[in-house]
Length: 502
Image (cartoon, rainbow, N blue to C red; front, side, top):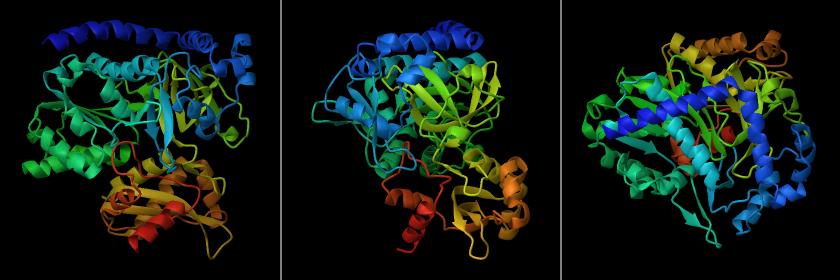
């Protein structure tokens, strides 16, 4: 088919470029750094931070402080009001709306044409290139692509600038030929009400020949189950016999993997990506490994904050040359979208330094360190998955927070879990889960010793659909919205309690 022939040519060209930055990562990042500084030298941000005098990275670090969204927001507000040449020289028309996981306030991330073309679209094409490189006999283009995107349609600021979920922005800017290979229609894809959209997507796609799907696991699973219900089947292969690839990201796939294996064909391939409103960062380039290749030529310059610096006002950062494997780092980016030394709030660890491969470990605001235990989301999810496998259980959703113990001076971790298949013995499940965490996290194990600083974890089982209904109550259904996994206080647990007993 013409699409497959054309893509074969693209794969050869692009894999050569990917191989180049894998072999020469530092040179590629150094060249990118110089490009970003030169391009933004004439902007207001560039003038304010003396970009014209920046010769090397040490100058950049001295001139530009690390910022979060809140501290970078004054520049974004000026862009939203219509001012141009603020942080990037080309016109900013689009803003990706993202509320994040732990903050109910909307964030508006500027999306330049360079960010769309050289980052987000490039990432999408590279996903397919890497897939075809691993599976030359793939036939994705013989059918249609299903994208389970966000729930926000496009809206307009007073000055004519446009905003919506990143998926909505991407759909609105896709070339017309792509529409021929995508389902459902743009009208359905951009529906705002998630429940109505889910039903419309199910009915519009269940008679198409879908070969590949992209979306957040939790919401994609709901869609697949609804389609199976409408068709009266148990497996999605009976609906889409040529379905071969699911591209997922946004949240860990581990808690949902077994549910997907139950509803999908054994032939299904799974591919993880690491993309966000701020940029496209990583792609799983090896089907036999669950880490991701850090993409170094997407217009993003990377720095990394070691864990011991996370709570510092002016944290020190490391470059790629300085990172180590299996250490948690917060990700800081400077981009062709006009973000400068921007702390995106995600944490990663490197699994390889040649080439640079990463795994997402959580969020800087989603880890528990009440007693020095340094529990990351990755620890919690792996331990929970191992416990479920050992005790023949399955978890739908969960969240964890620290609670002050009533009978001792320490704390305990309160796990609120919604089971699909509950364990026969909850006490045994608690102990097994606690032991699993102790085995993989030496800090947790040390603080649990003697039940002095940290008491044994406790599990509260909540009814089916609790998390889904709570997310709906919060206005967080669908798309890029995620259940917060770990939190440093009991805010979400209290909210869920109030919701259950309302």
